[in-house]
Amino acid sequence: MEHSEPVPTEESTTLANALVDALDAVLSCSRSVVELAVATFIAGGHLLLEDVPGVGKTTLARALGTAIGGDTRRIQFTPDMLPGDLTGVSVYNQRTGSFDFHPGPLFANIVIADEVNRANPKAQSAMLEAMGEGQVSADGRTWPLPDPFFVVATQNPIELEGTYPLPEAQLDRFMACTGFGYPTAEAECAMLTSPDSAQPLRSLHEICTVEQAQAMRAAVAQIMLSTPVARYIVDIVSATRAHTGIRYGASPRAGLHLAAMARAKALMAGRGFVIPDDVRAVAVPVLGHRLVLQDGGYGVAVMKHAKRLVTEILDQVAVPRAERRTAVGGFMRHER
Image (cartoon, rainbow, N blue to C red; front, side, top):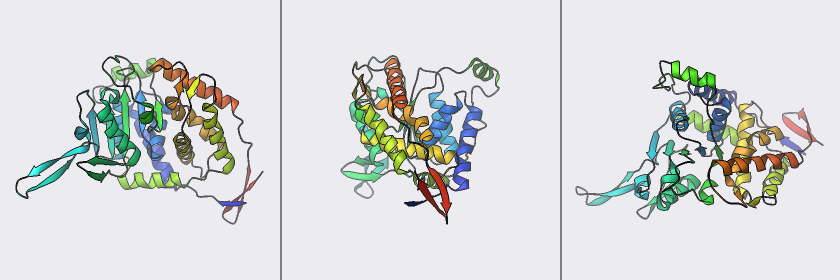
């Protein structure tokens, strides 16, 4: 059977890697975290950053907002926050005698949701609709959000008293989740001696426009995913539902997100098709935060254990053998 081989535009691949280079130059976190953040954005998902305070989670989110362009809003979540503080409210206009809708901070291309686990369930439900549907409901009406719409949420896994752990349904809305870890001694020393240490993003400028960001996302969607690789993704997701130590495995949405992230990884590598290595490279950050373990719990230790289980599954699931790809008149013939 013959399949067309859509090739990502050179501009999209170049821009995606330019974003990585620009962020890596001003941030103290590892390059792999930056690559994951950019891949999540161009794959059309949302990113959850979970780590101890002071390692640069909000700085990464701000850097993404600056480099991607468009409108950027930051929301500091608190327990007394109401859904209207996120979605916006209608205010009576005495001149017209009607109510005018005033959009809230969710109406932006990049939304930085700081300490999202400190929001109460009502506010979290408003975020759930925005992330899952690309829209918000307010005053009996539905309002579409800008395109692209990208949420970078942060949460601190310590000082959990008085917080509201994100329910599994909302965690499942995040395409990827990762932590930073502490920077290397060299990176921390460079941060201390840099004249821009107080404002590390001072030298960062816009790398792409909103229209170019939309083009990158469209290019990712066109990356080819062959049937054997698709089956490999399904096998991995299915294995999480039967693995020892896991009470509830990954959802079908997790498989869709894993495929989207693998496509983004392929585009960043300049390929028009996904290979198993692309899937393996993103499986842990895509699947780890979605698993409910037999022992339950919440926090960094539980998340690390979940990610170790995903690594075990990757070692156990058979990798599809390589296919020969032969160019035939602009098409790719897959020969097993």
